[in-house]
Length: 297
Image 1 (cartoon, helix red, strand yellow):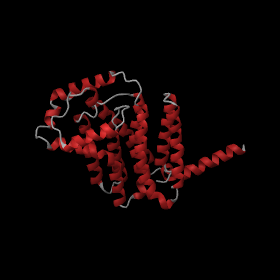
Image 2 (image 1 turned 135 degrees about the vertical axis):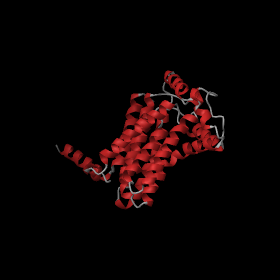
Image 3 (image 1 turned 45 degrees about the vertical axis):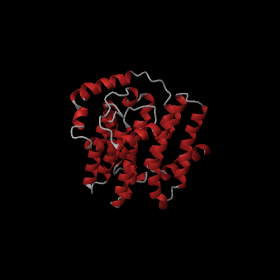
Image 4 (image 1 turned 30 degrees about the horizontal axis):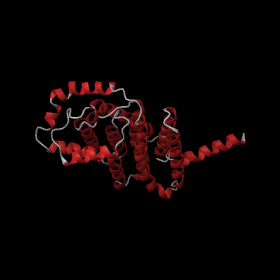
Protein backbone atom coordinates (compact mmCIF):
# COMPACT_ATOMS: atom_id res chain seq x y z
CA UNK A 1 0.00 0.00 0.00
CA UNK A 2 2.78 2.41 0.95
CA UNK A 3 4.73 1.50 -2.18
CA UNK A 4 1.69 2.15 -4.38
CA UNK A 5 1.06 5.50 -2.68
CA UNK A 6 4.70 6.50 -3.14
CA UNK A 7 4.56 5.54 -6.83
CA UNK A 8 1.41 7.60 -7.38
CA UNK A 9 2.97 10.55 -5.58
CA UNK A 10 6.09 10.28 -7.76
CA UNK A 11 3.99 10.15 -10.92
CA UNK A 12 2.06 13.22 -9.79
CA UNK A 13 5.31 15.12 -9.16
CA UNK A 14 6.67 14.20 -12.58
CA UNK A 15 3.39 15.12 -14.25
CA UNK A 16 3.64 18.60 -12.81
CA UNK A 17 7.38 18.93 -13.54
CA UNK A 18 7.24 17.90 -17.19
CA UNK A 19 5.44 19.78 -19.93
CA UNK A 20 3.31 18.05 -22.54
CA UNK A 21 5.96 18.44 -25.25
CA UNK A 22 8.49 16.77 -22.94
CA UNK A 23 6.14 13.88 -22.28
CA UNK A 24 5.81 13.43 -26.04
CA UNK A 25 9.59 13.18 -26.37
CA UNK A 26 9.87 10.76 -23.46
CA UNK A 27 7.08 8.59 -24.90
CA UNK A 28 8.93 8.47 -28.22
CA UNK A 29 12.23 7.49 -26.59
CA UNK A 30 10.43 4.77 -24.64
CA UNK A 31 8.84 3.54 -27.86
CA UNK A 32 12.25 3.37 -29.56
CA UNK A 33 13.68 1.42 -26.64
CA UNK A 34 10.79 -1.06 -26.75
CA UNK A 35 11.13 -1.36 -30.53
CA UNK A 36 14.88 -1.95 -30.30
CA UNK A 37 14.15 -4.76 -27.84
CA UNK A 38 11.41 -6.24 -30.03
CA UNK A 39 13.56 -6.07 -33.18
CA UNK A 40 16.45 -7.77 -31.38
CA UNK A 41 18.96 -5.08 -32.30
CA UNK A 42 21.64 -6.34 -29.95
CA UNK A 43 22.40 -5.93 -26.26
CA UNK A 44 24.51 -2.80 -26.72
CA UNK A 45 21.91 -0.94 -28.77
CA UNK A 46 19.06 -2.02 -26.50
CA UNK A 47 20.94 -0.87 -23.40
CA UNK A 48 21.64 2.54 -24.95
CA UNK A 49 18.04 2.80 -26.09
CA UNK A 50 16.73 2.33 -22.55
CA UNK A 51 19.29 4.74 -21.10
CA UNK A 52 18.10 7.55 -23.37
CA UNK A 53 14.64 8.14 -21.81
CA UNK A 54 16.14 7.89 -18.32
CA UNK A 55 18.83 10.43 -19.16
CA UNK A 56 16.42 12.79 -20.91
CA UNK A 57 13.97 12.61 -17.98
CA UNK A 58 16.81 13.54 -15.63
CA UNK A 59 17.74 16.45 -17.89
CA UNK A 60 14.16 17.73 -17.86
CA UNK A 61 14.08 17.49 -14.06
CA UNK A 62 17.26 19.55 -13.83
CA UNK A 63 15.66 22.16 -16.09
CA UNK A 64 12.26 22.12 -14.39
CA UNK A 65 12.68 25.50 -12.70
CA UNK A 66 10.36 28.15 -14.14
CA UNK A 67 13.36 30.43 -14.62
CA UNK A 68 14.86 27.90 -17.02
CA UNK A 69 11.76 27.47 -19.21
CA UNK A 70 13.25 29.37 -22.18
CA UNK A 71 16.23 27.01 -22.13
CA UNK A 72 13.86 24.04 -21.97
CA UNK A 73 12.16 25.13 -25.19
CA UNK A 74 15.41 25.07 -27.13
CA UNK A 75 16.64 21.87 -25.46
CA UNK A 76 13.48 20.10 -26.63
CA UNK A 77 14.28 21.08 -30.22
CA UNK A 78 17.87 19.93 -29.82
CA UNK A 79 16.68 16.53 -28.64
CA UNK A 80 14.80 16.01 -31.92
CA UNK A 81 18.20 15.40 -33.51
CA UNK A 82 18.81 12.56 -31.05
CA UNK A 83 15.37 11.14 -31.89
CA UNK A 84 16.31 11.22 -35.58
CA UNK A 85 19.69 9.57 -35.06
CA UNK A 86 18.13 6.74 -33.04
CA UNK A 87 16.34 5.58 -36.19
CA UNK A 88 19.68 4.69 -37.73
CA UNK A 89 19.78 1.73 -35.32
CA UNK A 90 17.13 0.14 -37.56
CA UNK A 91 19.07 0.62 -40.82
CA UNK A 92 20.09 -3.03 -41.08
CA UNK A 93 16.59 -4.47 -41.12
CA UNK A 94 15.66 -6.46 -44.23
CA UNK A 95 14.47 -4.43 -47.23
CA UNK A 96 12.39 -6.40 -49.75
CA UNK A 97 12.37 -3.56 -52.33
CA UNK A 98 8.75 -4.20 -53.29
CA UNK A 99 7.64 -0.90 -51.81
CA UNK A 100 10.26 1.13 -53.67
CA UNK A 101 9.34 -0.51 -56.97
CA UNK A 102 5.67 0.31 -56.38
CA UNK A 103 6.40 3.92 -55.38
CA UNK A 104 8.70 4.42 -58.38
CA UNK A 105 5.93 3.25 -60.69
CA UNK A 106 3.54 5.78 -59.17
CA UNK A 107 6.13 8.55 -59.58
CA UNK A 108 6.42 7.82 -63.27
CA UNK A 109 2.73 7.34 -63.89
CA UNK A 110 1.59 10.53 -62.19
CA UNK A 111 4.62 12.86 -62.33
CA UNK A 112 7.72 12.15 -64.37
CA UNK A 113 5.93 10.79 -67.44
CA UNK A 114 3.82 13.97 -67.39
CA UNK A 115 6.70 16.46 -67.48
CA UNK A 116 7.13 17.10 -63.75
CA UNK A 117 10.91 17.57 -63.92
CA UNK A 118 10.83 19.48 -67.22
CA UNK A 119 8.29 21.96 -65.86
CA UNK A 120 10.48 22.72 -62.83
CA UNK A 121 13.57 23.18 -64.99
CA UNK A 122 11.86 25.16 -67.76
CA UNK A 123 13.37 28.47 -66.64
CA UNK A 124 16.78 27.04 -65.83
CA UNK A 125 18.39 27.04 -62.40
CA UNK A 126 16.24 29.46 -60.31
CA UNK A 127 13.37 27.14 -59.34
CA UNK A 128 15.60 24.08 -58.76
CA UNK A 129 17.80 26.26 -56.55
CA UNK A 130 14.78 27.44 -54.53
CA UNK A 131 13.60 23.87 -54.07
CA UNK A 132 17.01 22.68 -52.91
CA UNK A 133 17.27 25.63 -50.51
CA UNK A 134 13.86 24.81 -49.05
CA UNK A 135 14.97 21.21 -48.55
CA UNK A 136 18.11 22.41 -46.76
CA UNK A 137 16.29 24.83 -44.46
CA UNK A 138 13.85 22.22 -43.17
CA UNK A 139 16.46 21.12 -40.63
CA UNK A 140 15.94 24.44 -38.86
CA UNK A 141 12.21 24.95 -39.37
CA UNK A 142 11.34 24.10 -35.77
CA UNK A 143 13.90 26.62 -34.53
CA UNK A 144 12.85 29.37 -36.94
CA UNK A 145 9.18 29.20 -36.01
CA UNK A 146 9.85 28.91 -32.28
CA UNK A 147 11.91 32.07 -32.68
CA UNK A 148 8.88 33.68 -34.34
CA UNK A 149 6.88 32.98 -31.17
CA UNK A 150 9.58 34.61 -29.05
CA UNK A 151 9.83 37.66 -31.33
CA UNK A 152 6.05 38.06 -31.07
CA UNK A 153 6.30 37.82 -27.24
CA UNK A 154 4.18 34.66 -27.27
CA UNK A 155 6.69 32.29 -25.71
CA UNK A 156 3.99 31.22 -23.24
CA UNK A 157 2.56 29.21 -26.16
CA UNK A 158 5.83 27.45 -26.88
CA UNK A 159 4.74 24.21 -25.22
CA UNK A 160 1.64 23.94 -27.43
CA UNK A 161 3.65 24.79 -30.56
CA UNK A 162 6.40 22.31 -29.68
CA UNK A 163 3.88 19.58 -28.92
CA UNK A 164 2.31 20.03 -32.36
CA UNK A 165 5.70 20.01 -34.06
CA UNK A 166 6.90 16.96 -32.14
CA UNK A 167 3.77 14.91 -32.76
CA UNK A 168 4.14 15.28 -36.52
CA UNK A 169 7.91 14.83 -36.59
CA UNK A 170 8.25 11.94 -34.14
CA UNK A 171 5.25 10.05 -35.49
CA UNK A 172 6.99 9.94 -38.88
CA UNK A 173 10.21 8.70 -37.27
CA UNK A 174 8.28 6.07 -35.32
CA UNK A 175 7.02 4.52 -38.55
CA UNK A 176 10.48 4.06 -40.10
CA UNK A 177 11.22 0.58 -38.68
CA UNK A 178 8.06 -0.78 -40.28
CA UNK A 179 8.74 0.58 -43.78
CA UNK A 180 12.43 -0.22 -44.43
CA UNK A 181 13.34 1.50 -47.69
CA UNK A 182 15.95 3.55 -49.53
CA UNK A 183 15.54 6.81 -51.47
CA UNK A 184 15.19 6.71 -55.26
CA UNK A 185 18.47 8.57 -55.83
CA UNK A 186 20.26 5.66 -54.08
CA UNK A 187 18.25 2.65 -55.19
CA UNK A 188 17.76 3.81 -58.78
CA UNK A 189 20.93 5.81 -59.51
CA UNK A 190 20.81 7.91 -62.65
CA UNK A 191 17.02 7.61 -62.99
CA UNK A 192 14.89 10.78 -62.91
CA UNK A 193 17.65 12.85 -61.30
CA UNK A 194 17.59 16.64 -61.73
CA UNK A 195 19.30 17.92 -64.86
CA UNK A 196 20.18 21.13 -63.06
CA UNK A 197 22.83 20.69 -60.35
CA UNK A 198 23.15 23.76 -58.16
CA UNK A 199 25.48 24.51 -55.24
CA UNK A 200 22.54 23.83 -52.90
CA UNK A 201 22.03 20.46 -54.53
CA UNK A 202 25.66 19.52 -53.90
CA UNK A 203 25.39 20.64 -50.27
CA UNK A 204 22.21 18.63 -49.72
CA UNK A 205 23.75 15.52 -51.24
CA UNK A 206 26.77 15.93 -48.99
CA UNK A 207 24.58 16.26 -45.90
CA UNK A 208 22.29 13.32 -46.60
CA UNK A 209 25.22 11.19 -47.70
CA UNK A 210 27.34 11.85 -44.64
CA UNK A 211 24.84 12.55 -41.89
CA UNK A 212 21.54 11.02 -42.98
CA UNK A 213 20.03 7.81 -41.65
CA UNK A 214 19.41 4.76 -43.79
CA UNK A 215 16.48 2.96 -42.20
CA UNK A 216 13.55 4.32 -44.21
CA UNK A 217 12.18 7.14 -46.34
CA UNK A 218 8.49 6.49 -45.58
CA UNK A 219 6.84 8.67 -44.52
CA UNK A 220 8.86 11.78 -45.32
CA UNK A 221 9.81 13.40 -42.02
CA UNK A 222 10.92 16.47 -43.99
CA UNK A 223 7.35 16.97 -45.12
CA UNK A 224 5.69 15.99 -41.84
CA UNK A 225 7.95 18.23 -39.76
CA UNK A 226 7.62 21.22 -42.10
CA UNK A 227 3.83 21.04 -42.14
CA UNK A 228 3.59 20.27 -38.41
CA UNK A 229 5.69 23.32 -37.59
CA UNK A 230 3.48 25.35 -39.92
CA UNK A 231 0.30 24.07 -38.26
CA UNK A 232 1.87 24.98 -34.92
CA UNK A 233 2.23 28.68 -35.78
CA UNK A 234 -1.10 28.77 -37.60
CA UNK A 235 -2.77 27.54 -34.42
CA UNK A 236 -0.74 29.28 -31.74
CA UNK A 237 0.41 32.50 -33.39
CA UNK A 238 -2.88 33.70 -34.93
CA UNK A 239 -1.86 37.33 -34.37
CA UNK A 240 0.76 36.91 -37.11
CA UNK A 241 -1.29 35.26 -39.82
CA UNK A 242 1.34 35.98 -42.43
CA UNK A 243 3.83 33.79 -40.54
CA UNK A 244 1.48 30.82 -40.72
CA UNK A 245 0.73 31.40 -44.39
CA UNK A 246 4.39 31.64 -45.32
CA UNK A 247 5.12 28.52 -43.27
CA UNK A 248 2.42 26.50 -45.05
CA UNK A 249 3.66 27.65 -48.48
CA UNK A 250 7.19 26.76 -47.44
CA UNK A 251 6.09 23.28 -46.33
CA UNK A 252 4.39 22.73 -49.70
CA UNK A 253 7.65 23.76 -51.40
CA UNK A 254 9.54 21.21 -49.30
CA UNK A 255 7.10 18.53 -50.47
CA UNK A 256 7.90 19.28 -54.11
CA UNK A 257 11.63 19.49 -53.37
CA UNK A 258 11.78 16.05 -51.79
CA UNK A 259 10.36 14.42 -54.91
CA UNK A 260 12.15 16.56 -57.51
CA UNK A 261 15.53 15.97 -55.86
CA UNK A 262 14.77 12.22 -55.58
CA UNK A 263 15.30 12.35 -51.84
CA UNK A 264 11.86 10.76 -51.57
CA UNK A 265 9.13 9.15 -53.59
CA UNK A 266 5.87 11.05 -53.99
CA UNK A 267 4.20 8.47 -51.75
CA UNK A 268 6.56 9.48 -48.95
CA UNK A 269 5.60 13.13 -49.31
CA UNK A 270 1.87 12.36 -49.34
CA UNK A 271 2.25 10.16 -46.27
CA UNK A 272 4.28 12.86 -44.53
CA UNK A 273 1.51 15.36 -45.14
CA UNK A 274 -1.04 12.88 -43.79
CA UNK A 275 1.04 12.44 -40.64
CA UNK A 276 1.11 16.22 -40.19
CA UNK A 277 -2.69 16.24 -40.18
CA UNK A 278 -2.45 14.09 -37.07
CA UNK A 279 -0.32 16.82 -35.52
CA UNK A 280 -2.90 19.41 -36.57
CA UNK A 281 -5.63 17.34 -34.90
CA UNK A 282 -3.48 17.11 -31.78
CA UNK A 283 -3.14 20.90 -31.73
CA UNK A 284 -6.91 21.23 -31.51
CA UNK A 285 -7.03 18.60 -28.77
CA UNK A 286 -4.51 20.42 -26.58
CA UNK A 287 -5.14 24.06 -27.41
CA UNK A 288 -6.96 25.81 -24.61
CA UNK A 289 -7.97 22.65 -22.78
CA UNK A 290 -7.59 22.20 -19.01
CA UNK A 291 -5.21 19.30 -19.71
CA UNK A 292 -2.95 21.56 -21.79
CA UNK A 293 -2.85 24.16 -19.01
CA UNK A 294 -2.06 21.48 -16.45
CA UNK A 295 0.92 20.38 -18.51
CA UNK A 296 2.37 23.84 -18.62
CA UNK A 297 1.07 25.40 -21.78
